[in-house]
Image 1 (tube, one colour):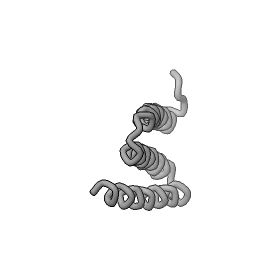
Image 2 (tube, one colour; image 1 turned 120 degrees about the vertical axis):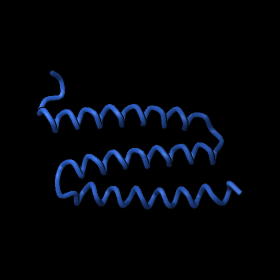
Image 3 (cartoon, one colour; image 1 turned 120 degrees about the horizontal axis):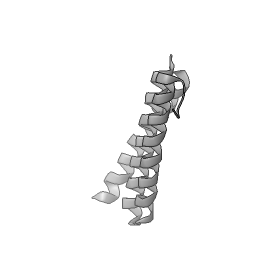
Image 4 (tube, one colour; image 1 turned 90 degrees about the horizontal axis):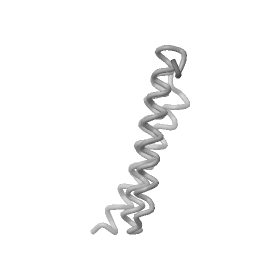
Length: 89
């Protein structure tokens, strides 16, 4: 069953990632672009985890964990920059 479901889920999440890139490029203002970038890294994280399940490899889960940490830190840094204009106080 997973051999049929995982490619379908990967395709749907891939379409969502493409739509996020469109919102990232077209975003009317900066908070919309930050939100699109945050959602894009979550979609990339989901794709990597699904690919790791499909190939039964633990390496992809470690990569997903690194992407999650970097995405969180970058979102916090951009939000702080938007609020204060400076990242490091």
